[in-house]
Amino acid sequence: MAEVSWIKLKVGMFDDSKIKYIEALPERDTIITLWVKLLTLAGKYNEQGYIMLSESLPYNEEMLANEFNRPINSIRLALQTFEKLSMIEEVNGVFKVTNWEKHQSLDSKSKHREKNRLRQQRYREKQKQLENNVTVTLRNDTEEELEEEYKNKKKNKEDRSDDVFKNSINYIMNNLDNNLTPHQMEQIGYAVDDIGEHADEVVEVATNYTKDKGCHAGYLIKVLNNWAKENVKNKKEAENKIKPKNKKSVTDDVIAQMEKELGDES
Image 1 (cartoon, helix red, strand yellow):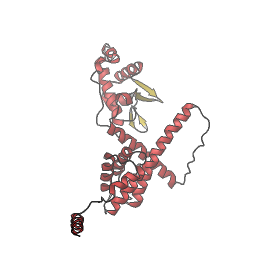
Image 2 (cartoon, one colour; image 1 turned 135 degrees about the vertical axis):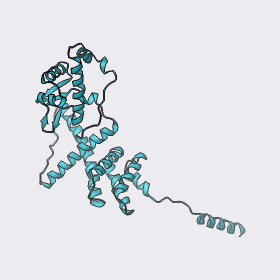
Image 3 (tube, one colour; image 1 turned 120 degrees about the vertical axis):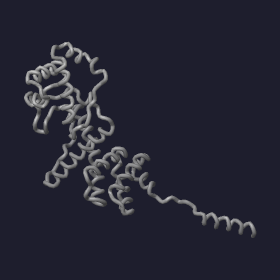
């Protein structure tokens, strides 16, 4: 995940009972400073609170001491304190800030961005599987526990969302622009989310409309954003947006008036 440029700190942070406990310790200033530094480090990697230098390299005590320019004993004391207070946990040998998503809740745009990131990742994986002639089979539904049924429903919903996005991108690339940039795909993803379940149908209409006008992906994105704001939700509503308006011309009004006058004279 791309790093974030800021993290959230509650204004009531120092009213928290865990912070008050730390403030009663001899090394309180060092531990609290290291806590804030740890939060910023988790935000820098920005993967559910894991303290990582890279995807395959988690931070250990020595690396944290070097990163924070603190003695190794101070790092160990702080980590032990945080674990004792359930502020961090160790998952498969990797330090992780507990309840990261709860404390660092994303705003709506960030959620959009994260959803797009995951969706594009799954899209690329599926494309790679197709290129490698890997056949993905789906399991038949069987009688399973309620928890498994819930997971399946959730997965089906995600799959449908992925399919709408995939169908939209494929149609655009096959009929308008086969060199979409990651940023353009992200912008299209925002519009797809806002339009909803039948967004791929709307994208098809918008793509054809854009092509007929001799325009490209940038124009298409503007069309989709406008339609999303105007609550266009399906193919019929999209087609109504581009249907020529039947307006009577001034000439029609003049002719109608002349016919009326001639009728009155006869």
